[in-house]
Length: 272
Image 1: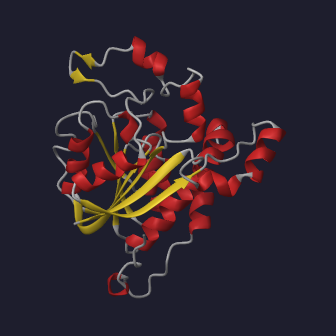
Image 2: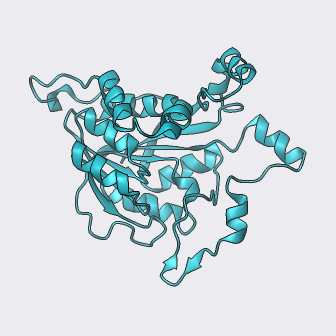
Image 3: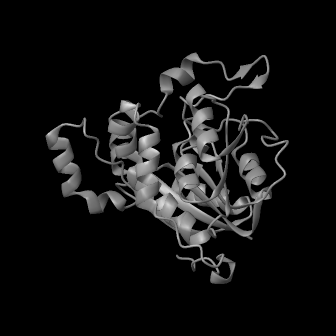
């Protein structure tokens, strides 16, 4: 499944495509004081994020509008802003260092609880592309309701990019057979109340639900998108991993992009 590049008539004259490598270097420089991010988190996620920025470039005109739902510490929003897009971001979590990063890079941000019935009550804009990266597995209340809300802020024929863990792998099957498999954040799930004084909580440490490929694609279709792209991707290679583990990953790397071995699934939908 594929999709043509953006209509060249929508590309402003004289504006060249963004230099992604420069943008990545700039984003990493913005996080230079965060050793965990640079040494562990970024290597694990670089492959997935490079796919995102490449697909945003194919589907969004330079200077176009991008919404990141569940932006976390803001690194993808910062990266896309450095690629030249108008970026809006939202999350329930508000780390103090993110505000300065967003102010410096021109990212607009507003708080939201993605488990609310109406998560974006004050948002009036529509966007060329919406990114939901490693978020849907954290939604407890109404996953389709969140996708419906996102769809209402996606322009006609605009795109949504969804990434989430792939639950249907041989490794997970082995965990189930041996009685060891559980969702990420199981201990937090067991010990954390899900409804507080102000309603349903937002807890990023818990995977409430992981989806099979068929379930994820159906969720995206039910929200009013046609599924254009389905991929599977591996977790990257951390510098802190042992030499034998890094060597083993490199040896089987092509197989880690298959449904049976890929740690994550990556789906692009186009708004009907």
